[in-house]
Image (cartoon, rainbow, N blue to C red):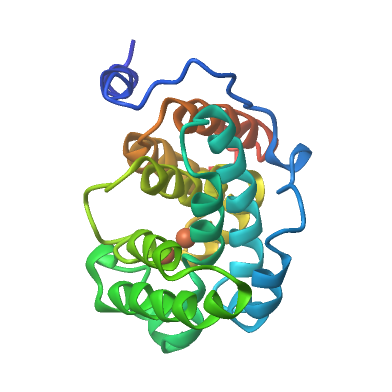
Length: 228
Ligand SMILES: [Fe+2]
Ligand SMILES: [Fe+2]
């Protein structure tokens, strides 16, 4: 067993377990269900045009719904609304700085990251009241969006599911195609980085198993063993 595999298994012991089924099939076979969130989608179309959100947000919503199925104790509406809106703030920050600061150096703590979180909270507070969501629900959505990239700790089960859904889309080949270019990495190097840096961050057993299944498929599909 390699050291990295041993490390991954050791970290896995701390992940939130589930007794429910975990769907590890390709995400494209289970798109997000229902039309109840369509009014929110319609309200944030301009925000989906920033930073690949029109790819990232729907795919992450599909992952979030799978995670909710694996953790039925979670408030699924809260998880679904929060993941749909979490990155809408990227549309309200300086586009140039997204790439110059958001994906280089110490990108996790770049000021632009805090800004996109604050702006995302503003989008939620602007859009949700007119669509029939009450103040308490909206503040729970905002509490998840606020710090979703920069806060170390998860504050709730719903927060953890949003965090894992936000990461899981990158393991699908579409996420790899999109996000590897943001970091200026070739697909094989980006897949290595997913295994090394993102897998250990996953908080749930379901997210972990879905990520590993996706990564194995993506590495095979993209021929990363030789295209490096
Ligand atoms: Fe974000
Ligand atoms: Fe995100």
